[in-house]
Length: 473
Image (cartoon, rainbow, N blue to C red; front, side, top):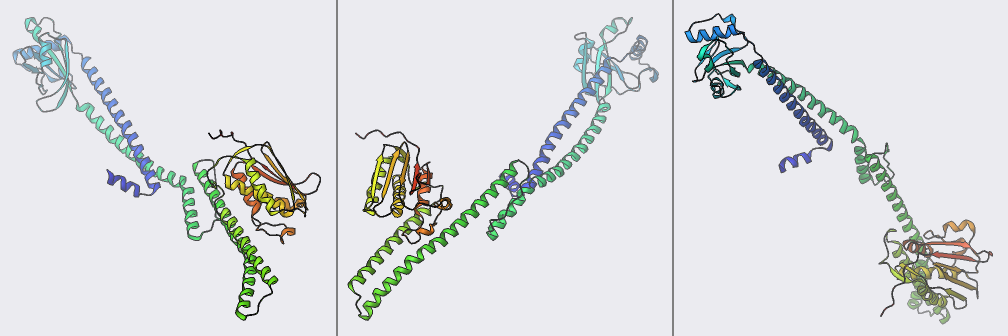
């Protein structure tokens, strides 16, 4: 059984479908043919039995047959119906057939009828030539036969071959028709399988083409609304997503290389100047040496920040940065404000923070708030003011800087995008894209808009609330 199953699995799918269709049709045809054959047999047997019960012979024929059996004489054969075999059966088991007929041994039922123990008997037996006969026995309807007639029964029989022959012919006809039906069903199943699996073949060719060439632009034509159409749409959507992901990956690598080139070049230049000074023995003035070392330190800090941002963005967009937990957004904002004040000591930062709890990853959320505040610090004028408010889940950070032109607002959350006016400022262009990703993963929204009075920019972060955790004991 396992070997047969293994061989079936080795067949192509269309062949298996055609085979299953042919097998199902064969079972159905066999069931119908068998039912037809058995119903026909029962009907023919009933008709044969009815003809035996209704066989009529007049009293004269019965007297002549009785007289012939008692005297041992012979009667003309034409006096008895040719399709019947007629014989008399006595209560002691002896029997006397009509002239020119093959005797049929008396059965217990026939003897019981002759003895008067039952009214009639119907059974199948063989005559002396081995031919199967259907026999009906009833009491001898003879008047004036004396006491001998009271112990006799008459049996009327016909050969079962009369129904076996048409049944055999019917069986061969059903077998031929069923065979043709199975062959036709197999051919039809193969045609249907080929037609139905044509989209699967196209999908297979497309997958093989993608695996061979890495060409993600291939698309499969979609027709209809069935499961194959859904599979084709899913494949097209998958290849489109893969193509987009590959393009974004290539763009990320290109942008990262571009952003790394500037600090690395500056860092290499400064280190070469320090190395040349030590190699030649020509000392660099202390002020210039300190400036070079400060520049090296700043470039290393910028590289470390850029590498951290790249690591953050290397994770899939659908992946969570860490386990989510209920955290106090107001406490995280206070912590971020302390860091922002250190980076902009000359700025005035005001804060009004109402309690609000959210479900997020604490470290990622704090980094996002820090990036929003850093952006405000970066673009604020000297001795400017930054206003921070947290009310009913909306955190707003407003600076009083030059603002963002309307045509640049759609690009502020793109990776490595930097405003032309900000290209001379430190940063990698990844801060706001990381903020947008973190806020979206927490189920929130972020937006930048010009301030209502046109002075500066407002960053708005909305996060859904979470139940306040119980106090620790």
